[in-house]
Every structure is written in C-alpha cells, then in structure tokens.
Image 1: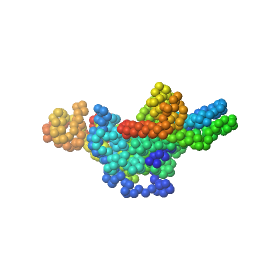
Image 2: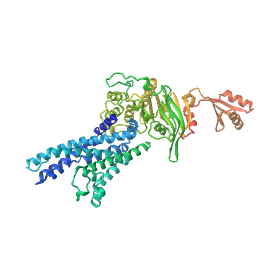
Image 3: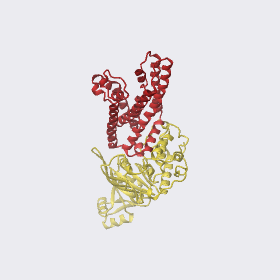
Image 4: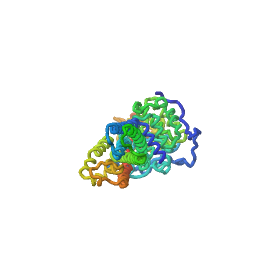
Length: 244
Length: 326
C-alpha cells in the first residue's frame, strides 16, 4: 500500500496540471487575503479569523482529485495503472489517500502563507489580528477540509469517468446547486458535501441562521460519511468494470 | 532514434548487485500460463468460447487469429482487466490479481497501451518502478535497453508511435518478469524495430522466460515463435508447434491432380481421410503425396491427366485454419 501511495504521489508531482492548480490556489488565496487585509477597516476578531479560511486549496484539490481519477480514462492510462496495481479497491484507496495527503500539504503551505502575509498587513495597519491559538485552530481545520475534498474528488472521478462532465458537474453543484439548496432548505443543505458540511466544520458563518449549520464534530462525521459513500460506490464500479 | 543492439539489462537489487531469483519465487515449473475453458460474453456477443491452452517457459508462443477472433479479450482476461464469464486464466495456478508484485512476474504490452501525454518517459517508468517496488536503477537500464535514453526526459506527447511502443516494452521489462505478454507488439514499428522485437523475444525465451505474443499477421511472428495457438470466432482452432499446427517447410504435403473424373476421385480421396479442394478443373489434395494420390486413382480406375506436388504455405494453412477470415 505504501508503494502504491508513493507512486500516486509521484504521479501527482510529475504533471504540469498539479503545479498549475497549486499555483492558482496560492495566488487566489493570497489575492483575497491581501485585498481584504489592505482595504477593510475596523476588522473584528471573527472576521480576521474567517479571512484565514480563504484557503482555496479545497476547490483546487477537489478538481485535482477528479482529474487524477477520471483522467485515467481520458488518457486511457487506466489499463497500465490496473496492470501495475491489479487489486482495484486498494488502487482507489491509494489514490484517495494520496490526494488527501496532497490536499493537506498544499493547504498547509497556502494557509501558513496567507496567515503570515495577512497578519503582517493587519499589524502594519494597526487592525485586529488573530491569536496563535485561533491561527492553529484555523490551520488544522483547513488541512482536514482539504484532505477530505481531495479524497472526495477521487471518488467523484471514479463515479463519473468523463473528466469534463465530472468537473463541470461538480462546479455547477458546488457553486449553484448546493448554495441554492442551502438558501431554500438549509436543514437539508447543511449536509451538503462541498459547501454545507465543510462550512459547518470550519465554522464559517455562511448561513443566515446559525442554528441550521452543523456543529464541527457532526460536520466532520458527515464529511467522512460522504467520502465513505463515494469510495464504496466508486470502488464497486471500478471493480465491476471490464477494461477493454 | 535508432534501435539498440545491446543485450537486455540484467536486474539488480537496490544496491546495484545482480538480483537473485529464488526457486520459491518462480511462477511454476510446468506451464507458465494456463487458460482453462475460458469464456467471455459481452452482452449478446460471445467473444471467447471455452478456450484452453498452455504457454510454456522458455518458448515463444504465437497467439494467432484474425481481427475480432478474441485474442485481446483472452489476454485481458488473463491479466485481470476483464472478468471471464467462465473458466480460468492463471499464471502457475494463480490469477494475475493474486500474484505478489505482479510486475515482477508478468510484463505486458497491450495493443492500446497509453501514457499521460504530459509526463516524461522517465517519470512514467519511475511511477511503474515505484508501484512495483523495483530498484530505481532499473529505469535507466530499461530505457537503455529500448534505446530511449536520449529521449527519456521528453514528454510522451511528442513521441512517435514506435517510440511509444518501445516505452511500453520498457515498462513490461522493468520487473524482469518470468512471463512476457505482448498484444500485437509490432504495430507501429518500422522494419528495424520489428527485427529488434524478434531478437528481443528470442532472447527472452532463451533466458527461460515464457513469451506469449498475439498477432493477426502470421508473417510477422512466424520467424520468432516456437509454438502457436490459433483461434477464430473465439474458439481454439489449433495448438502446438508451428510445424505441427500450420505445417512447415517440407511438412504437410499437398498434390495437385488433373483427373478425367474429378468427382469420383474426390469421393475416393475423402473416403480415405484426405482434404480435397477444387481449383478449376484440378484438385488440390492436402496431406497427400503424388504417390498416394496416384495409387488411389489407380485403385478407383480414374484416369489421371496430370499429377504435381504442391508446396503449402504457412499463410494458406493459417487461412484454412481460421476459416479464411483474416
């Protein structure tokens, strides 16, 4: 399993897509933090904390996970991948785990970077900053969230083999359908895999009514449940498929 | 990008020492590959029908048949890529999925072997080496063996079809496997490449490895193979040595005969077990010498106007065996 995990991490590091999406995550996260920290006046402690939740790693590792799995069919590399690792459930587990690890590592780099830059700007402007304890709390939550989304992306890629359909569908779901569901029925939407449960986990105040946001521990369990469900369905499909 | 003339690289361990293959690691002393009553159905199409054959170590076995005969499906079932609907396909009694470190036991090049276009050849092999737990040094060894060292750090999307085929072969050789399976491996290769491939197959067999090579073109493999397995319509049509199944030079005699009453002679020959094909006003008698045909004609009191021995080409035999569907 460790060899498979190392191989999947090596795969990740040996394509340009990985570096392009990681660079985009860093750039976008920095842009939001620098602009907000520079322009906002009278920032509260809660707003300052939420500023450091602007880690876009989650979005990009979600897409990378989809690309990493669905791309095996797009590039027709699934045959050689399965030949090298014929136990397909183990293969998918290694893939999901590798994208979870990659998500956590990238998130660590991005979050630490935006925390350092944001804190410097806020301090220079004599604005409220976030204490070390709160920073550590934000950091580990960002890491766990990115790890969840990386693994979840792999599951989506296993379920929807067409890479374009998977990516477009996921973006539409994340940016339109799930927010719409939260708006009209937050008691259901709070369990969503890409916005609802993640916001509850990091305690991002995205809902108009805080009571309809999951508690962090519950949100974490819901996220784990989504990955388990996606992994089970994806692995079953992968095992059954004839690679002709 | 020329074809290398070097010998295949010998495997080394992580410290660069020659690797030792333990007897207990070996797939098996008898048949390296065993196909038993294998069947595969895709919906209403029965691609493979109760197919059985063996592939022996130290020999090159040609897996021959026309396009759509079921060769690729059989190989994919053997490699665990498609699930058989009946029978088994094993390596020394174990399925591919059950092999420990399968790439060190079996190397495979399939017809549509694809690569991530943005990854370099070296990185592609590094990934395979990591998955198979092969020493990193093997990557350079196999790159050298297939003549891709200079192009190793180029992205695969810039590779020609022949270079891709060589990269696929490098991947198959990475674990120095005991069994090599190649599906139409000469596709995309230029004549020097085909020659290189033949030599590679012979060297692998000479080193004791079992080599199974599929092709729909007999001429491409006839010079390399020891044994053949011929299938058509998903069914086994013949198995054994090339000479036994298809007839070699001097084997399987045939006689062309011009008789005054060809119908009577045909009936008489067929009653004695000979295969007779009508070619215009003449008959081609397969498996019979001129003496045998002449004797039978005399016994049946059929006037013979002409009698000539005929050579029987491998292609003609292959054509007959596969029902003329090539």
